[in-house]
Image 1 (cartoon, rainbow, N blue to C red):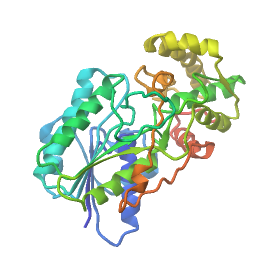
Image 2 (image 1 turned 90 degrees about the vertical axis):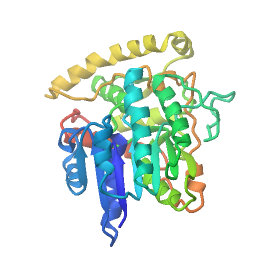
Image 3 (image 1 turned 60 degrees about the horizontal axis):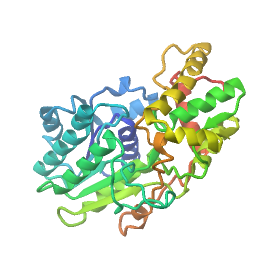
Amino acid sequence: MPSVLVVGSANFYGRAVIQELCAQRDLSSDTWMIRGVDKVLPELALFPPNVIKLFESVDYRMGNLRSAEFLEQAFGDTQWDYVINIAEYKFGQTAAVYEQDVRLMSLEVARLASKYKAKALVHVSTAHVFKPHGSPNTPHVEDDAMEASNELAATHVRTEQELQMCKGRPPLVILRPALCYGPGDRQNVVPMLISAQISHATNQPMPILWDKDLRVSTVHVADVARACIQSAKWIATQNQESFAVFNLADPGDTTNAKLANAVAQLFNVKPSFQNSAFNFIAKRLKTSELTEEVNESLLGPWMELLTQHGIANSPLSPYIDAEHPYCRLEHCPLAINGSRVENTQGLDFKYQYSSVSPDTLRPMIDEFQQLGLWPTSI
């Protein structure tokens, strides 16, 4: 009987992991034990009805993930085959919040996975931790040097390093997703989707920052979820205290232009890339100054659009935080090589979403509209 504990199961990645686990469970003749823990009830997490129904079919427990006592209770009555830890991440938090919600929580999960003799531990980090190298569009591989460009990335780097050194830990996999999109995303590509919706409503071109050829590697959240589960199964068959790290980025070689065109086609608008003079000025602005300019230009029109469609309250915002990797695309292109996970013998993983496209983005809008969070004009 496979047993899986998902810590952070109601966030963007965690929801997708629960969905994939339930799909595999329903195709299996075995009895599965799936437990999800997080700090919010699924009914309050703005999930669509079909996802809430899946959560009702697993052992879900709500509590404070910062509490060692709660995490101990989450582990305590089962010897888990696989523990999947998805640290909460949200751009724009303080160093103290990242310390609590990423580093300390992850280290406590690792300690408990060791104590309760889990067969495998998977930790979801981020691919936005690499030091820029001489060729900006050469994809980073897992062994490239890391360099934190902001506090969130710095916390992930420290957490990765300390997890590797944890004594007695189970076999460990660290996954580093590139810019992730898919149902449940509210901060990665949503600002660009909102910009396109505004352009559609105003019959104006969609403004796009930075050079069109810069790399901005992407990965669908369903592939991240499958990688979590397949890598857990694989590492559990390796030697005790085995360790592996995998970048997660689809083989589509996404550029700034490819992402912008996919979004623009979905909304039937034309992308307008800023000229070299504008980009020259933008590169010399502080990141905070640049994001302030972008946010002010989009927030008002978005609120007006929501009001016109009778949407009184939506958590979706065009606001793009200074820590968002897209804000530093000109300085730190997001070129990520995600092929190692496909080429590792015995892991049995292939990307199901090979490239970002209007078809892969459309379900995000469909879900937002179903939940009453997005205008119905496309």
